[in-house]
Every structure is written in C-alpha cells, then in structure tokens.
Image (cartoon, rainbow, N blue to C red):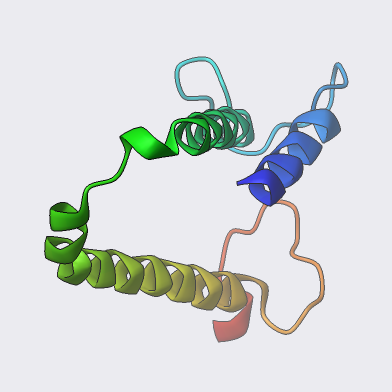
Length: 109
C-alpha cells in the first residue's frame, strides 16, 4: 500500500501543474490516480489501526473457515495482475515506453 501510494502520488504531482494534460476522464471530480492515492492512504490508515488494536482482531475459528476463501481471493488477485500485465504488454508491444494516448494494440499491428 505504501509503494502504491508513492506511485499514485507521483502521478498526482505530475499532473498538478496548471495546463498539463490529464490521463483519462474524471470520476466524481477526481481522476483515477487521485482515487488510487486516496484508497491506498485509507488502506494504510486502516492497517495501522488494526495493528495498533491487534488483540481485538483475533478470530481463531473464522481464520480456519476462511482459508478456502483466502486462497480464492489470492488466486483472483494473481489473475487480475496477470491479465493486466498481458493487456499492457499487448497495448505497448516491445517498446520500453507506451505512447501517451494509445488507440490500438501495438503488439497486434
């Protein structure tokens, strides 16, 4: 979450200058990189609160029942990351940098 917040904050800072191009459309007045920073910050805050109050979050019976659900969620996370990586590779091809506003998949053209 900290690394994600750092990268999202970098994107916010890159686009904070007046007149700079933004990437993508706004959702509820904020762009995706701003929402990503907010979500990562809330996750960091929530995790820190849970670590401070760790003795109140001990559920031994629930932990044993959630093992299958946990494996499914981890598999879903890995799958989403894999498909995102493959989609980005198909969009950018073998180039080290993607073009700013891609309109087609460079790998297939």
